[in-house]
Length: 280
Image (cartoon, rainbow, N blue to C red; front, top):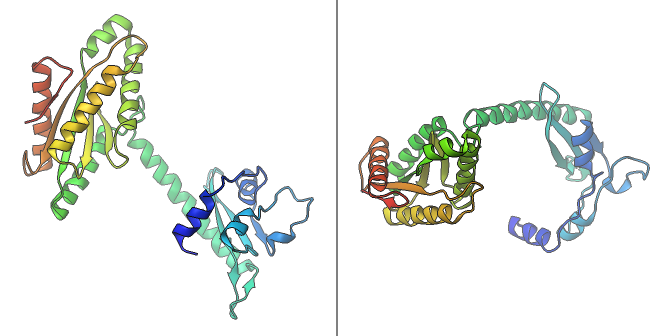
């Protein structure tokens, strides 16, 4: 079966996952399961195999090896499943001890890599808003500029700044100000495309990298964000944002040019009365 056909069949009817599935058992206990026949599991075992997936895919899972992805600290980050080992004659055979040892070693290395990637991801996250931080913005901006240059695709940037944010802190306190920042961050994530990069640029300012987006598209995006924030019910009252957008190649030839152009546009939006979108 092709990947699309498998996905279609799986989506025809929601799966009801069992708490005692093979993967669930391994994730909970850290045990390794090496089963020769998934259809011959004794009923007294604390796990079971659900044959409905096989039935929908016209497939038979016979031998299966389920290994935990466990880091050196003992944290289980996931599981690795291998099914239907093939012998030299092409017949399905059990996974032998040598193969199990190899997969166990690979799973351990994979867990270390996953753990490292998660820690690196945390170093790129803003603790208050849970969007990416300025450090990550600079890394991604460099990457996206290279992509823009290589593929000759437009690259846009939107800078969003909360209007009168100091007044919010002064009148309602920093806790309320923090909630306003978190609320705006959530709206940015919700109303941005999945491949746009939402970051907290500093203080009450957010920077959103808009990949493969023209200036017209950036202006449309900026107006959508402005309206969404203005219409949102924040706990303490109304919040508005001003946005400056810029685009390459329209507004420069480098990443620094793009940032500077968006910053000038943001200044113009503030100067012209706030709660608006401006572009060079």
